[in-house]
Length: 81
Image (cartoon, rainbow, N blue to C red; front, side):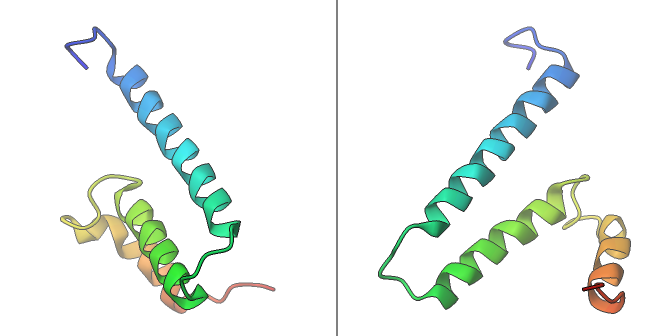
């Protein structure tokens, strides 16, 4: 960031753009035929999703308080269909 003379906001926006593009790539590749079982592909995709969730609003892995509301919602709040 300092090396390129960018502000923190510019650096954060650059990283979010990279993340959005990576998710697009993942979604496209997921749709292609593969010799791997769908169950394995689902596990890999879910791991990527969980990593995104843990680090989206800070370091939720190290500071579990950041994840409390998300995990509570995930485990206990019903999802309307």
